[in-house]
Length: 202
Figure 1: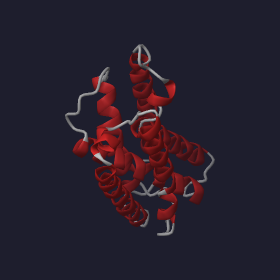
Figure 2 (figure 1 turned 180 degrees about the vertical axis):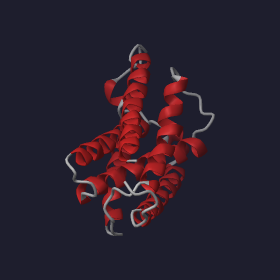
Figure 3 (figure 1 turned 90 degrees about the horizontal axis):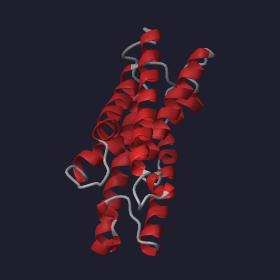
């Protein structure tokens, strides 16, 4: 079972690298391409974070340090972020017109990787039991990301997603932000709760 789980995680890491690289190769050829804009998307960042988290989990397993609190905490946070990517995309952004989108990469980054990451966290037992106070740490990165996006939207006009566009009014943007923040908090609580389960022993 351990070999199978490690193989699945390795495949997921490779899939993220391939998907990000595949989209980047297309996007970088656009005349409007900017490095900071491409890597400013929460989608790209959250997928990179989950890939790093899974890679660290593989390293910990190789060193027989399964259930390390720091690695588990990071992976738990990464699971929250990638789940947020999946839910937000498939609710607020489904059908949105995006130029230069690579279909297979888009599906991996927004659907299959989020689904796998949540199932991986839920099913496999090689993670430490997290505490509710960890949820506050989960909120730090999204808060910093959002602050940067709002500042950029008010200055150079770049926003990664339509629901964060200041042209619709900061009241509307604030409601969207609040909704996403509540979801992240609730997802964090769920991830902490799931860390207590031991469905498949690894």
